Length: 262
Length: 325
Ligand SMILES: Cc1cc2nc3c(=O)[nH]c(=O)nc-3n(C[C@H](O)[C@H](O)[C@H](O)COP(=O)(O)OP(=O)(O)OC[C@H]3O[C@@H](n4cnc5c(N)ncnc54)[C@H](O)[C@@H]3O)c2cc1C
Ligand SMILES: Nc1ncnc2c1ncn2[C@@H]1O[C@H](COP(=O)(O)O)[C@@H](O)[C@H]1O
Image (cartoon, rainbow over all chains, first blue to last red; front, side, top):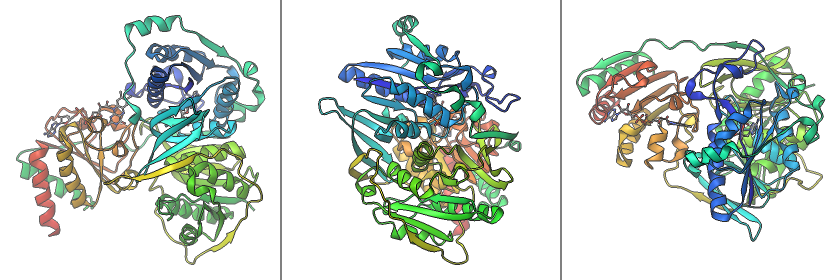
C-alpha cells in the first residue's frame, strides 16, 4: 500500500508563543514549529497500516522552505519520504489555495489512501481535507476511529464517529480519510529512526513543478483577510478556598449563585 | 439581491440539528442588516421534517429530496446538491456549523463553488465588506476579525454564537429538483451503530463538569455525571481520562479534542495542562477542585477549592440538593 499523509507544520501550542505579524499573518519566526498534533495521529495510523499490509508512506506538506525541519521528525517516526511544496507565491494562502496545491500535488502521485488530521492547531477549521477530496473526486471518509483496508478487494472500511455512536463506512480505494486520536497514540521516534530520517528524501516542489499557476493561489488572491485583532478580556484573579469539604462545597454554591449560574 | 444560505445539518433521526437553528437565526439577522435574502437548504432522502423545523426560522426553505443521502455518507451528497441550489454566486454567504458535518460541507462546497471559508466563528456582524467574522485563535489568546475579499463566502460557526430564536411566522417551503446525477463518489454506510450512553454534544452545553486523572476510574466518572446532572450540565474529560478508557473520546476537551465555551466549567481532578487549557479557557466561569494548590489550573480558574474531590464532590451534591430540594 502507498499512503500519503498530509502534515502541516504549526507553531508549537505547548510553547504558547503564537502570534500574528504586523501584516496580520502568522508570524512563523515567533514560535518553534512542530508537526500538527492531529496529523501525528494520521501518521501513526499510516505506520500501523503499512506494518500490517506492507508499503510506503509519503508525507505531503505545503509550507515555507523551513517546513522540512519539522518533516524530519515525522520521517523519524517511520515515514518513507517527504514532499514539501514551497513557493514564495504561496505566502498568505487561504484554505482554497492550500487545497488546490495539495490536490495538484496528489494528482501526480499513485496512492491507495490519503490520510489527514482533523484540524490544525494554528487556526485551521478542519476544512482542507474535504476540499482536497472533492477537488480530486476521491471518496471522503471523516472522523475515523478505525481503518480496515482490504487491498485485494481494493476497498477500505472505516469506523467513523457520529454524535450517537459510529457509522461503518465503506469505499473503494484510493480514498481520503480524516483521522482522530482514537486511532492510537503516536509513537516516539527511535534513535534508529532519527538517524535514518537524516538521509530520507524530502523532495521540494515549486508551483511550476506541480503545474499550478502562481497567479491563481497565494496571498494576492486570498479569499479572506484578517482586518483586526484584539486580546480577550483578562480573567480575574483566582479565589482560593481551603478548609473542610463542606466549606469548599458551600463556597462553590455561593460563588455560582452570586454569578447567577445556579 | 444578495443571498445568505443555511445548509441544514440533521440529527440521526432526520430532525434539524440545533446548530442549524442557530445558523438560521444568525442568517436572518444578517439579512435584516444587509437587505439580502435568507434561505435554508435541506438535503435528505426525506427533507420534509427538517424543512418544517427550519422554516420556523427562515422566510424560505429549499428542499432537495435525495435518495442517495440515506445510505451514504451525507456531507458530500449534501454539498453537491446545495451547490447547485446556490449556483455560482461569488457574493453568496453560506453558514454552517463548525462540527464534523459543517466542516465537511464547508470544505466540499468550497471546492465546488470556489467560495472561501472563515472557520470557527464566535460572532458574525454585517459590514460594508459583507460578513465580518470573529474567531478565537491560538488557544483563546487572541480574537481576530476577518472578512471575505469577494464579500461572499462560507462561515462555520461555533455552537452558542447566537441563541436560536424562531421568526415571527413560518417561511415558505419550496422544492428543488436536481437536473443531473451526483458526480462526487459516494461512501456507503454499511451500518449505523448507536452506543449506549452517547451524550449530548458537549460543545452545546451551558454547563460542563469535567473530570481528569484525579477522578481515578470509570466509577469516579459516575460521580462526575451526578454533579453534571445536579447542575443540568454535560460531562467532559481530559485526555488522561480518555486514554485511561474511563470515558469516550467524544467527551475530550482540548487541543486534540473539542473546543468548548460553556458558561460554567467545573474541573474535577484536572491539572490544567496547556493542551487542555486551550480547549476551555474561554469558558465564562471556571471552578476547579484539586488537592494541589500549585496545579497550573490555579493560574486561570476563577475559584479553586483545594481538597480531595472524593470529599468535596459528595458535599457539593448535598449542598446543591438542599438548595433545590
Ligand atoms: C499533542 C498533545 C495533545 C494533547 N491533547 C489534549 C487534549 O485535547 N485534551 C487534554 O485534556 N489533554 C491533552 N493532552 C494531554 C495534556 O498534556 C495533559 O497530559 C492532560 O491534559 C492531563 O490530564 P489531567 O489534568 O486529567 O491529568 P494530570 O495532569 O495528571 O492532573 C491530575 C490532577 O488531578 C489532581 N488530583 C488527583 N487526585 C485528586 C483528588 N482525589 N482530588 C482532587 N484532585 C486530585 C492532581 O493534583 C492533578 O492536578 C495532549 C498532549 C499532547 C502532547
Ligand atoms: N499546508 C498544509 N500541508 C499539508 N497538509 C495540510 C495543510 N493544511 C492542512 N492540511 C491537512 O488538512 C488537515 C486539516 O487542516 P485545516 O483544514 O487547516 O484545519 C490537517 O490536519 C492536515 O492533515
